[in-house]
Length: 389
Image 1: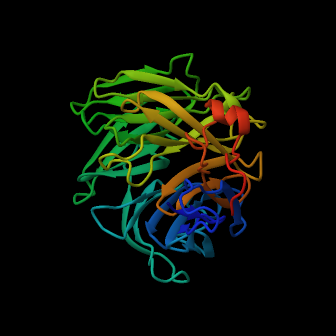
Image 2: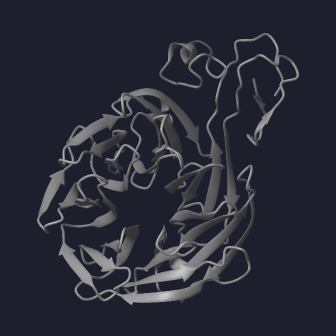
Image 3: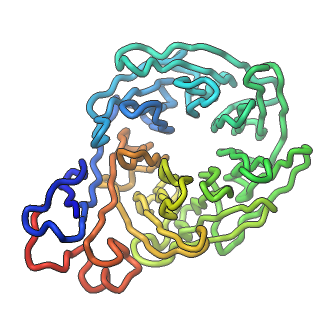
């Protein structure tokens, strides 16, 4: 078998017992970024490069990471257009490999940029600029799907479709307040947007008709994170309000039906979930059914800032395991979570930091599972008399 070192940098031989089950240590390390009052989105454009947006300064932070361990090594901040444009949303382009879509919320523009991934100190290069038509105003989230880019206009309450090859081809759809994230359903091609101020989700069908899906009361309120999942459904999270959340998140199938889930045990009780991610290989045959949910203090000051690693069974139908990875700095208003082959990354809007996290993997039968009997007996302990870290 293989043994893992304390920095989760890969397997090493176990000096005490070569046949022992493998394990790795849980870790959460915060790395400060160039000073700003808000740190927002995060994407990976290459194994060695992450990008983070800082809206108040109109800046893009380039983070060079170790391609094996994922540990951040160096950062450089660049003003993309001006300090007053409200740079916010980030989306890696498949249509234009190596390029990234960016939203400028305060000037109502979309940019396609070349981040110049091979040079940390080189400023990103603007390749294309798209001005949104009135009445659309305040683009926030952004995704690329096929031949189109979709953006949510947080200020004017619209969802907008833009042609990639025909940037003057627009479709502007009004919606209730306030669209945050947008995703296209992999099976139905319905477009969904989370409406945080309305505690509802917009469903926009290919024929242009719309429906508003209220969040079930038992799930919570204030939907924020919303993405297409590897099970070919759309998933979303509920942040809750000033009194906290219900640990609520849900799945939308190709008929628009919502299946709800709640984290109601252990450290996740009362959590407000702001974002979510699946592993980079989650769509591969035989991949573990696993989701990473981000708990945040954005709405409730005392809510836990943590990543909850949730294991499922039955095609993401039933929760089987739960592990909490809490950030060292609490009340940090965690904002986004990104899962890569080098680990998990979280942006902290209120702490001006990016955290690099790794879940623990115990040698005890089910691994680190806060819902299981072995965890209630010995936590993360290893059922052996001696072993090496």
